[in-house]
Length: 557
Image (cartoon, rainbow, N blue to C red):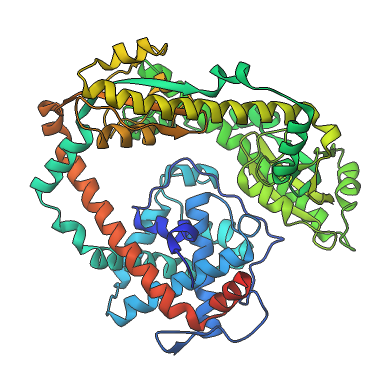
């Protein structure tokens, strides 16, 4: 009933990976406070493994998840995830920790302290918090980051301790990954890197548009049949104040140049992988990139400080109403702008907004009118509710040209697929009679295209464009016998037939060089899969006695 946890637990699942703090900025909003309950105001938090969950346990797990989310996302989850998602992550964390306790997994104080120091030992974190040295003192981290959110040093210690516990549990439950033998890894590598030499013939809708007969009655019927395609989804419109990063670059550069900036750049550049900046040709160019990043991060941090002060004033203005954004902005000489209506998929058109911006915008209401600071690539935003626009089906008269085009493409796609299916039958007979694939295609007026060699590990193949999905092409090549053609494979564009000319064995030199890393990755993948399977089973059984299960069950009805 809980469903597949893999789909809903990306934050919790990230703990499996080694903790790495790379180029993030801490953002926090002192006006936001985490919920102290389970989302429904009830004091009953259910039970896991037959043990009742106390209020203290739930709140402790929630505080730990806040810190976990901060370390992995550079922001607090208040406005970034829904209450139901937050509740799910807290219960999953409780489930894992209770299982670890049942198995007797414990961490010493020294181990917990070492992990905490590892998390605090970050030059990036030191720069963001404006402290000297390579490690951020615990008291500075607590005072500047944790305390504004009602978190404490004890919460951070518990998080560090349980981070080790969870990783040890993952390793214990994923032991099957270690059972991957070198022979199995070598065989899988050879399979994934075996290259196909192939030809392909496409049946694209664009080649059949001219054969489509368009009549007013047919187009009108098409519109009626596909009304759902012409429904505009729910949209929102928000007003906002932007703290653009470009307004803070000069100040950030000036402040950083007062420090040992060149030494910091040198140290940071030396720690980066050699291919971190694939386009740079010299160390000097790479260091210039690092310099730009540091200045921009400092500018974002400065912008966030200003945005945070502005947001505090807005949020504390009583009574809370959307107009307060413009009121406070006028007092501070800031400009308020308004987005065009946007939906949850596309987001605002005026600027590049991250997913949490759009999610926060859709969470606004007249009685909960504000969100922010929200971090986007180019700045920090404070937003206010403006209006909601319910979804509607656009009238035929308004979108006649669009419907006509859609009708033509749909009909042309059907013609292309019919042609591909018919040719596939003819081709099978021709090949059986010894006819060459290319000759058969040319005779039918469809010269084939020769593809560059590719394998199951190929990540891109520009030659196919948007006429087919790469994974579908790989599957067709993998299942077709050498010297034979695949059946007709339907695609959104029409379809294709692939002819496998030969298979080329994996390069033995590359295989010998890559195999150790490939084997390690395969073992980690198998371990992750084993742990994920366990987590799915445990959650489906043990979370039945929690409000999370009851809320999801109610939502499925």
